[in-house]
Image (tube, rainbow, N blue to C red; front, side):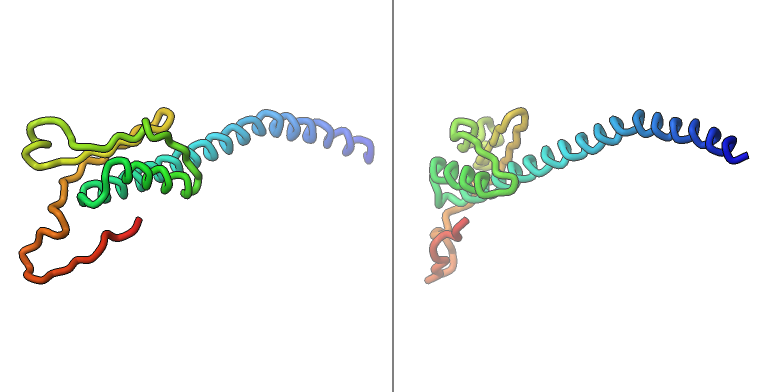
Length: 143
């Protein structure tokens, strides 16, 4: 009787081993896909945040395109995950077209690998052009 019980357990342990051997690559693949998506999402978030901040800075009229580009690059380098985008992959300037000219629209575009983010924003009037007599709005806010 004792020997018969041992024979019954052997096929079950083999079956569990086979199931694990089949499912393990699926679990590893699923985990790798989740990690890759998380990294893609984090990089995209970094690009969007830096590009929007750059658009706000440039549209204020207080920083030149080169200064804004440097701020965007610094923000991306200091972010998590750190992203290194060369200056020639960041375009900053006035948006082209009739509506863009009519509404004074600025455009900031950041390209990193296969991702591209663009922000279009209305160019703000100068801080110093105000209708409030004696108003001193101070220096620009640091980024």
